[in-house]
Every structure is written in structure tokens, then in C-alpha cells.
Image 1 (cartoon, rainbow, N blue to C red):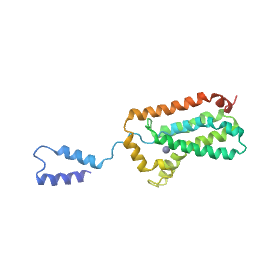
Image 2: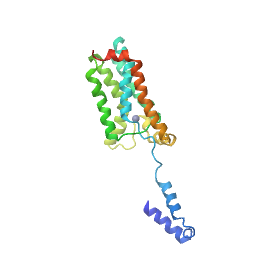
Image 3: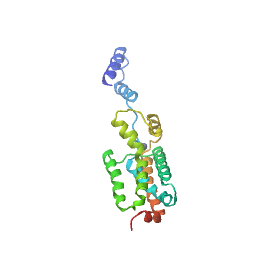
Image 4: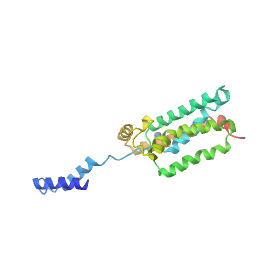
Length: 204
Ligand SMILES: [Zn+2]
């Protein structure tokens, strides 16, 4: 950017456009606006919140595991619904309040805290809910990034164009953080409203 700015500066200096009113700073600012991306407000949603949503959502499916003749059908439906839930939450305003590495560590710790207390027959269900809730990020933003796939995405809500569009409309950081808080609160409300199912899933 420096050489481009210097080049334009020389052209304008020779043409006499600068030096009259001290417009150098304005020119550099204009160059900066032309070349630098707009600030990113909402970024990707914290995987910790996705994981919390997935674990909480398992309460909605535990009775299906008990009643359904085909557990496999329940597991596949649960996986797909949790992936869709991830997409829905990615479309909402959100922020990234903690460093990514801390976010990943907490997201990994969440199931580790629950699983020792979950009855054996619900273990697959809760793991599928957890997996479905983080799978889009693991594939698109983890595996593909490590493999150097660039902007290639499987899940449409992670496409660069969608990302840019959401970044252009979610510019209020207070609202973004508020939605993060509301997402966590929604998990607590779900757990409280389904506390009998939670007791059902947990060991006595
Ligand atoms: Zn995502």
C-alpha cells in the first residue's frame, strides 16, 4: 500500500494538486479506505456457545431415544437438526469475546464435564448433539483451513459472501454481545424447563 500511496502522491505532487492546502493526510486516508477491509464486528460465533446449545438441545431428544423403535433414525435426525441449529445461530448477531484457543478448550471441556454423569443409554445421544453442534465449524473452519482449502465451504452460512454480508449488517457490537448472552441464557432456560428430562438423563 505504501508504494501505491507514494506513487499517487508523486503524481498529485507533480500535477500541483497537493502542496496548496496540505491535503496529504486526506489522500492517505482515502487510499486507506480504498484498500483496507472494513472492521469485522461479528466474526464467527464462539464454538463454546454452539457446544452449549448442542448439549442443552439433547434434552429435546432424550424421550425419543426411550420411545423410538429405531434409535438410528433418531440419531441421524438429531445430528441433522443440531447442524441446522448451528446454521441458525451463525445467522444471528454474535461476537467473539474470548481468544480462539480458549474458546476451543472450553468447548472441548463442556462434554467432559457432563459425560461422566450421563446414563449410558443417553451417551450416544449427547455425543451426537455435541458433534452436530460443532461439526460445521470443525469441517469448514478447522479441517479445510488446515488442509489449505482456502475459501471452500460445505456449509453455506460459512461462505465468504455470507460472512461479508452479515459483517456489513451486524455493526453494533453491543447487540452482537447481547445476542451471545441471550444464547447462553436460552440454554439455561431450556435446561430449567426440561429439568425432569435432565434428571432422567443423569445418573442418580
Ligand atoms: Zn459456524
